[in-house]
Amino acid sequence: MGNKFINHLLILVLFFQFNCFYNPIVRKLLELDSPKNNEELWKFLPLLYLATPLETRISPSVGNVIRSDTQIQVVFNRSMDTGSFSASLGTPLNGIWSQTVVQNDTVTLSGNYPIGNQTFLIEGNDIHGIKLLPIRGIYTILSSSTNIYYANTFGNDTDSGTDTSSPKQTVSGAISGAVTPAAILIAEGDYFVTGTTLNLVEGVSLYGGFNKEFTNRNSNLYISKIIDTSTLAVGNSMAITAGGSITSATVVDGFTIQGASNPNVLFQSVAFACMAGSPTIRNNRVLAGNVNTGSIISIAILVTASSPLIIENPLIEGASGFGSFGIFIDLGSAPTISLNAISGGNAIGSSHALYTAPQANNPIISGNTIFGGTGQISYGLNTSFPSNVSLVNNSIDGGLGNTSYAIYHGTGVADVGNYTSNVFTTSGGGNRYCLFEAGDSNPMSVINNQFLNCPQGLYFDEGTTAIFSVATINGGTVGGSSYTGNF
Image (cartoon, rainbow, N blue to C red):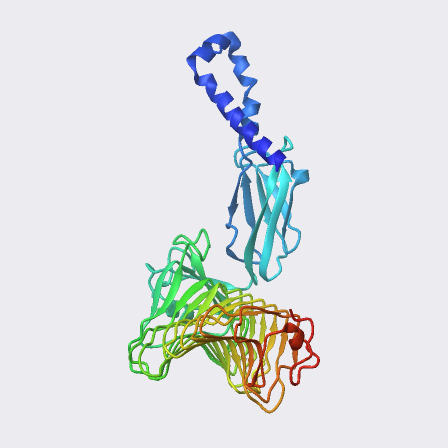
């Protein structure tokens, strides 16, 4: 901390010292305008050099989507000590040095990059020993055989979409024109789904969050939004659909996906529907539509007879409806749900961050921040036999419903579910429970979980008995003699 302060202070002092050379009094006293004394000024130039931060320009920019054969160019604002330099992108990189302005100020990096999201790191010193602060970031690496396409709101679906100057205009147009394996890079802007659904195609991945020029990618700054604007009287309104041919090789990454606020939908409004298809859904904001009429339900992600990877999404949120759901799981699904923020939304009736229907579902749920939402009843997780949930390292808040449950463990004829190292809590409502057993079915294991802020019961045993002591939870519940380590 002290060295950093001293360095900053030195830079500030040097800046003001150098700028005082422009003061005519100082120049007169030092006789700097005399031809024979101009050499005095040159003595100070190294100090100005040292006060200038060591900077870089990286292309393609960190955060981008690139193929495994893409070269990365780094340009520094001074000559570098090539022997001190190191670079990696999931593996050590090779560098070829060249000159852009001065000798050895540019390095072109290449290597056998591993496929997937990989951490980029460069370190080194300049020729005077000044250390470059380590530069870290993430690149998404695609196979070298991937065909790259572009979509932009000012594009034209009759264009090829194969370069940034001739992008497609719609996401559906880009998908239909793609030759697999393909990745479609989609610039910021609103992309509308009207009267139909956006059907994914196996081997065609979608990446949003680019600026209009495709030079930078940041989905927090450059919002690529897929919006269902349907108002048709249909049974189900779905913004994006993954059918049975879709596997985890098909990726949807970097979008805001908005379900339809359709007053004419008959049953449910869904932002992202996995209908027997199992894509990778990563780094998105998936928002259910508002449907405030009748018994319509609102779902952000529907998982039906499928096993998608739902990972690292900053927000998955139900909206308003008779029932609202962050993630709805049914018909024998086995999704992996990890490192997301999931909310149940604001329901007229019941809101659910996560719901597993009473079918043979086997979800793996880990490392998420889960909030039940608001409504008459709110649930962090609502699960029932024979769904068998693996629940590990989550923070689960039952929400603000009039009755709120961090975990609602429904009735059944056998024990199911393993709950390990989670936090169970509630935020509001008149009836608040951390883990509520409806009866006849117990979790198979409850180990090392924290229970707090549940005034009506930390554990509600067999639908009849409120337990307020973790000492009782640890081995003292009906069917829970092996429960241990809870606090």
